[in-house]
Length: 186
Image 1 (cartoon, rainbow, N blue to C red):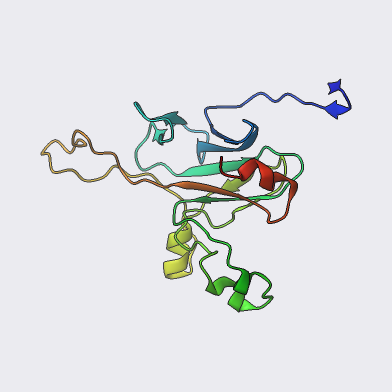
Image 2: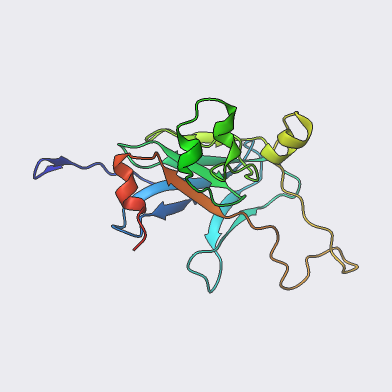
């Protein structure tokens, strides 16, 4: 559709993703899908936590099943970076122009993230199947796998209020790109 010189396209969301939108103008910026790694009986979805606007939970129907994260940059004009877990990155000018390994010396890196690949090209899904923390610790690739946690109850069921491990989602525009304005704090 073309309206007043601007082109618009519509997309249908597949599955049950989490869609991250700009707090500035409401533009959809990126999506995150949780999917079983194979087409078995397992199902997966991401759902909003009850009573919270900004907390979500991933749900898989089969314990011990390998899964994958599918991250998609929904912008058409900018490269984004998405970290699942870890700590917020900070731009540090003293390291920013470095072209050697010292570039990664500052607080603008995030080694605690779950996903190793994190560069999102416009409208191109990125599938993450391997655990970055395991790779950092051993140098070996291992599939992401959801396991039920051991519980203190005799039946082995999760305790009431047991919320599991949390992974914050951080999305960053390429510094100086057109998308930067959509990420500005209000």
